[in-house]
Length: 424
Length: 64
Image (cartoon, rainbow over the protein chains, first blue to last red):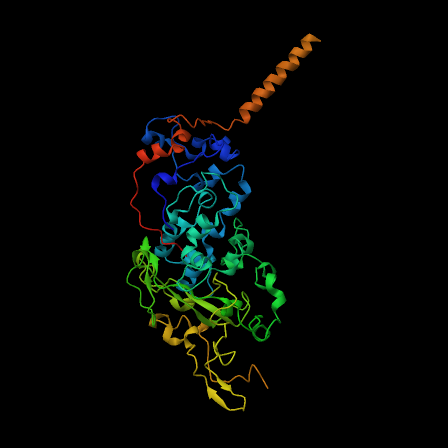
């Protein structure tokens, strides 16, 4: 996302019949600028007008108890512990990689001070204020008013959601990776909130990650809209995801997606951690940060959370020394979580390289070349027509120091043939 | 009767004054054409371009 020009970030454009900010936002326009932002008004001196000695603040909602109360007191109260404010999920991952499996955000404070203070100083800085969702672009996109300082009840998908969730979610959703097309839901003009129905302001202090915000029956699943296709074809009949069985829908209907292979702390994407086994299509982003398109199938290691035995995995930006710049040389229990985590890419398409069987001899050629196949006379042979090894996460895909961490998601493959699943 | 009406009128006036003070949101200056006001400056593209130096920032990372 290209940053706005500095002047552009603070411009309130009066267009059409709008004669003042009150015409743009009649409710908040009544409050008056300095009652939220502080500073001095009137003043013909730029410095005095924006003097912190007179209480000027660029983002009043960084102190929501003062600025957003009393009108929004319930939201302010619960949002203090929301997922976006507290980044509980991030705390869980750090707690587990430092303190070990079985820990979560509730034990994060038991981590060494180097981690907790580093987290408070850096990670929480972009997890986020009221204004960075409802008025301006977030800090991570260098800010800037979105809609002439109008307080938007629903955040702007492009300027808010994708400003933070851009390099993976946004890129995938809009089909910006070479060779991809936009997610079918994007093309159908669905918005983030059509699926993400969780309460973003909810107190989430009891949940270890955003995936736990909703009860099981409330979790948005593909079959809420597509449940009528469970028996629609042989693939669905065979692979429809149940608890611990079948394939996640994404296994068949995702396109390649961005993976990240370096880590960030110390105010920049960390340089020099770019070894990607077997990868040649690695592009360099800002400050040495590396991302690359890939598609890997592995084991779903949390059946309670998601259906399907097999799922799509994404490499996440973490390494044993991710927090070295915080004074924490190495995570003590790095192996507690996979670095290839189950993911739900936002680049859904009906016909993908997995589902498109054009020019294949067998319907299973795209995925099952680890087995053997039988011809019409009952003779079998090894799969050789296509090399589809690359769509599974294999040992060879792993950097040495992450082999142990990823054991739970590495699939076990054997030459079992088709019969176990397709008897007769 | 006139005397009672005057008392009523007085009470209503006092009530309105109290209400108006209680509901006052504070300083509200919305003179979009006055350059000494917040709104006067922040609605003026030319003034903003003149007053504000561009920052030298790296491209955003794009986040997660």
